[in-house]
Length: 263
Ligand code: FE
Image (cartoon, rainbow, N blue to C red; front, side):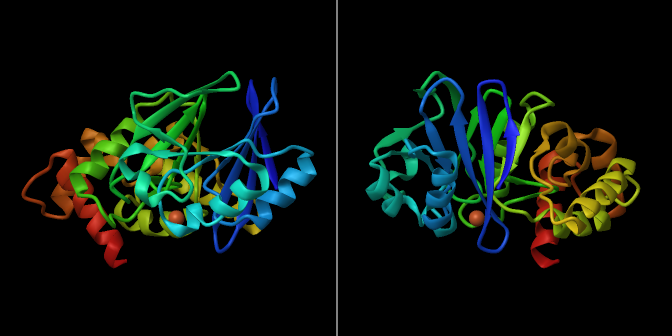
């Protein structure tokens, strides 16, 4: 378990399955203990024991099993509340509170913002708590989720919303896919010095068996190939090198996403 301190809460990161991260948010000023995307119940119960606290809430970013499989067992153990997307309520096991983008659920004094980010799934949401972003399978370290249910335009719009968050926002995504993503990124953005630096930094972390996550919005804007189309120089260079007929951000994003699908 890795822990990170924020002003009003701590984030505990639990590595589970093959490269999944479950996050526990422990409020400083109350008994609130929130789990984000419990892929399984066992690891969460163990962490609750270590922390000496009971789980009060489950937040789900989307319906996939590797984000919701622990819901019902944890709900049974702790009688906690399940919060998920209003637009995908029928696919979130045990849902109690249906959240939309306009809702800002206040839980135990924590300032929580819901952002709708369709693309990976049609009902995918992200949670922002102060300077911490929990984005599930939308934005990854140097990557983004596959488009299982959404369009390229939807995903580009969703990623743009996340990129608009404060630069220092910590990006707590749900998978440790960074090194594989960086390897792909190098094939489309080899001349980017920030990318080379990140490959070195994150390579060292993984050699030491440490997570590359959280990153920050600033790091993702500088190195993530799925946010780089925001940069005018990058996209004009990219569209020229890859002979795209259009050089707008969405066309470049789409081309990079299609390449990654084939990689
Ligand atoms: Fe996933």
